[in-house]
Amino acid sequence: MTIKKKFVLALIAYAVFGVLAWTTLSDDPIRVFNGNVRLRTGTLLILGLFAFRSALYFWRTRIEEEREGAKPVD
Image 1 (cartoon, rainbow, N blue to C red):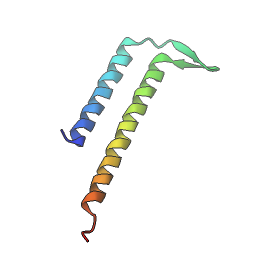
Image 2: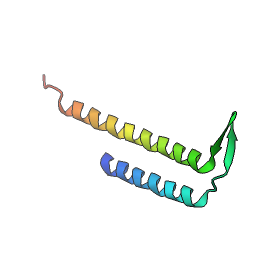
Image 3: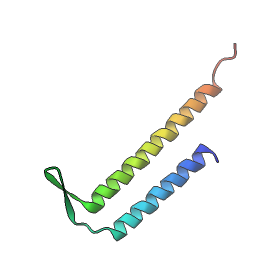
């Protein structure tokens, strides 16, 4: 399976988890340090961070593949 297919599947999974979290979790605030964070908002934020991390990995892999393909032959 190519890295692009894995990336697309990961984004689809994050979207499904986001929809499930939005529909099943209550919007009650929870105490984090000295502030309140809504449960849905916190969950979606964490899912968004995982999606961003996946995107960074995908972009890094593509750049590394391009550099390996463009190496000059000695």
